[in-house]
Length: 336
Image (cartoon, rainbow, N blue to C red):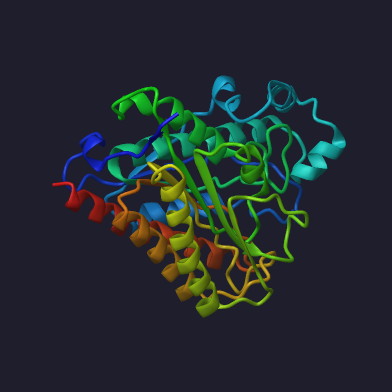
């Protein structure tokens, strides 16, 4: 198949200075035991700050992903086991959450929000999901607080829908996954391992979870304590290398997914890296600027963040949203 690189002129017109779309599922909570290390309150706290401090956004509650959409990246047996609550105790321990109906609903809506953000990004250049980035889930199991792989499902669905904006339904939308969560995106790499239309890039802690990495297209293992300057140097090199390899192999991507994890921060309980808040903001800025220069639409997910102070983590995610909003405004300006 011939690769399809989306011409910005083919993007559906959204109007000059249209407000950025931000998708959420914060009302659908997990019910976890007291003291559980997953920051269940983070989604609601982030939504409240975005609503209060980021004026002019379109805040939209996502619809849940359907079985058919989930089946684009997951096995039918796994989808059934999640839905029916027949996961083994070992499988639930690997996910890190006990099964519940609220877990199922939240997980479906998380995927649905990334699907919606991807569609909006294809239309307007950039959109955000205030959660997502569940990159440890593989086709037939969950892991590391990840039930379904939202980016894999959304990416494959966007490829299936590419005829809506491309000149030929027989040409394939190429995807780029830029995973800057502190943990390697092993599930995403596994799902796309034999797919030449998807390029997976991951910068992550070498000694962090998952302890057996799954080879992606470009993986950079970073040492414990890696700080702003070496991290940003590695990022710049990785973006350039990934872009060159994609263009040489089949053409530039038509859509990117950016996993903007807050967990490389120096105070993250699970991170082991040492980026400052300013370093993380510069990371986001460089990714957005790079994609805008290359005219690649991007769907942004928040991914991980497990700070000792949850409000610090929320502030890091909020800054990502603010920088995304600035980049979105630049997208709108250049299209007029």
